[in-house]
Image (cartoon, rainbow, N blue to C red; front, side, top):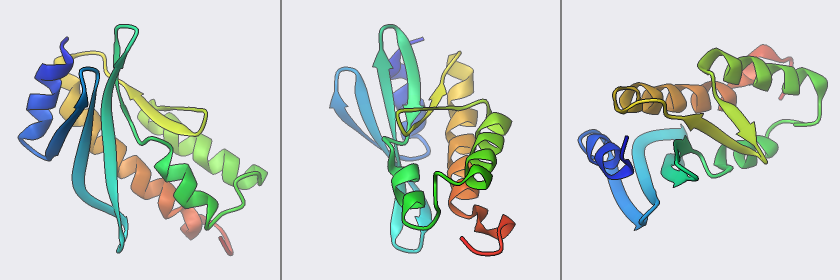
Length: 126
């Protein structure tokens, strides 16, 4: 699996910009709200290639939700578990296992971010 090959695949469906030899920025065209676009990063670290939101989802959510609330934490955990993603130091991460999975993971991450941003639907108030 090669980060440049994956960036090329993603470039067929999104605007991809090379940041460094080990990182690309992906402007998805999707929005977390009417004013805020969802931007992802394709990165390589210690031989692992992953998609990341660069902490943007939780930053956005912290303006709406009480992130320390047990109900909110449980909802976040449940949503990311559905997709098999992780949160590390506030960063939503999807580790890529194969070239074939990159497009599926890309779309899954966009959907996951949307569900997290709109989980107020499950609470009486955000």
